[in-house]
Picture 1: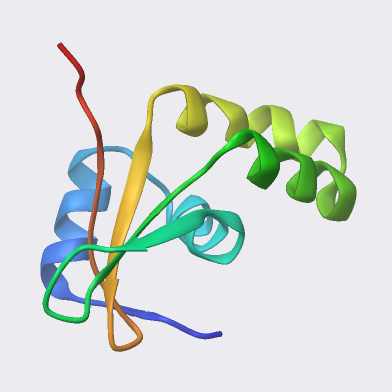
Picture 2 (picture 1 turned 180 degrees about the vertical axis):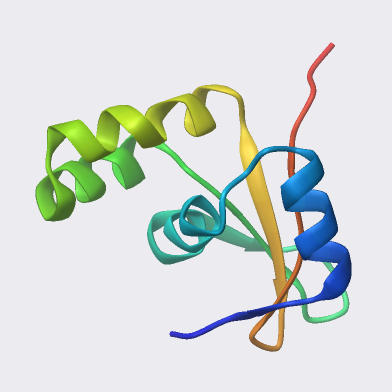
Length: 90
């Protein structure tokens, strides 16, 4: 599925150093949940990483793994990426 990025998403992903390819991988392979007003939140999980390794290989998965461990997430609504960030836990 092709997604477009809002201006806000482009600014945030640049500021947070989350490349567009990683955003696409999170949406394509990540687990999602409803987060209100029709928006969905996507995050990489162990199952996501297994699927990525199967499709793209171990080397690509190694590049993507830090985004899982740092809890990167993407918010999408109606085919548009709204934002991407890292979840901070205290």
